[in-house]
Length: 639
Image 1 (tube, rainbow, N blue to C red):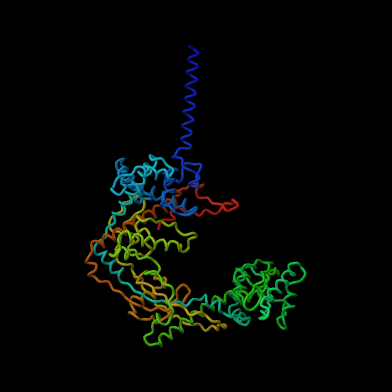
Image 2 (cartoon, rainbow, N blue to C red):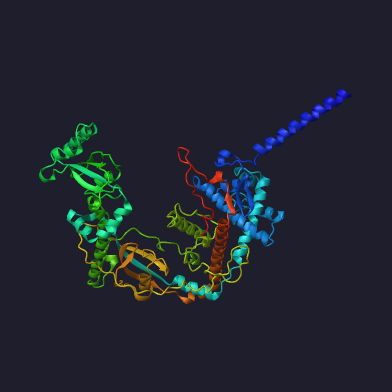
């Protein structure tokens, strides 16, 4: 009997051990664990990110990272997934505060209807429903498998994401727009101008300046204090350049380069000094050891572009390869001659500063001269006087979201595609002042209002009823939603040439004309930037064909402007579909309200250190394994 009991006890122990092994295997290798190779960033912790006390799991990250709507390259794929999870958790938290719930029946209905929820937005899952509307279970199961989660885990994640979507709808639909507000926006959006711009840029003149030592000495004499300060600020960041030049022999075109190749080899072998070689190959007064003087390698401009490029790539103590040009062959060395005094580098300092100052002045004078020529030409047209530059998008520098939404000739799907293309182009350019640009948020089902630019009249005004935190969003998002208020224009003195004596200038290509618009009035006008005087001239002073009476400065360039057409809104067009325009503006503002709420809430939580991503997910290293600075910033995608 005792023997039987021992055998039974052994069997139970074996059974228990095998059961324990099976559980461990499932936990470590089951579908809910995911595939490390697929995601490329598996962490040891199951916590991916903490958002205001809510711990986001690895399964949630798998869904956010591996789904087909996250098509970002490299590390941005991880960052985008984190951003979408932050969006979801912020909305879920607010939904829970307000008492919203998602039942099992609700999520089952959404899944069997072929819906996929991501970051508070709803998408259509391809293949989940066949042509006759029948739910295809295998397709959804395969979709969950591609995300490396079980169907049950997928369902639970979608349940939470549906709750986020519901909260986003509550915020969006709480925004109200009156007929009067929509009418004011209609007047604003349809009061547009098309115009031509001819820019005179400083850069071409910078390269065409023919500076002599006399020019530099003259500039240094009149700007001594400025150059002294620059010398103190820059420190000893200069090298002494020497150059050997051998002119091209038409009868033996390769002789010059061959000769300098031999000289370079002799210098490298220590058989000859660079200065001695320069004197041997020079003639008469040019026997100065090939001295060019002191330069900063970060700001070198020599006689020929090929020589400038080669010298800019030098380091102190090195020599360029033989440089072949149409004129002949060059060899330049950057010597280590100790620390220069101010007098030694005064010309180099003047060369750096004077090129910038004089090239800008040259561009200004060219623009002023061109304007005088235009004024003297009867029925002048910039369109005919200047060659056309490459075509620009219809709205110039940025998409006019509301005009696209109001276009009746486009289907809803076409509008979404056009908006997406315009938005993607805008985001690829990157935002000024950002190290790596904001993370782009895109998708066919996402509202255009998420991307409303600063100053867009569809956006809620500061101080509107859209609140951060858990406060309700009530009333109109317009906040007195008339078109963007035009600030009073401060009358500036007309742009005029200085009395500065410019150096000789080589030939500069004639600028080209670019057409912009039709574009509504805005703080930033395509081709003109933030120039209120130019904007006022376009909309309030010039009629069709009118040329501005002055030159405008735009980001350091000088431009001529001519109105091509001024289109006024037709009030009867608004009356034909006023209800639709009210609804369109409400939806656009509603989407913007959601984004504004998310941005404010997220940034506050970041300040309070309540958004903490797993460090393993956001760290990067170079090819040698050395850690790089953290690029990811929570809330980067919020606009």
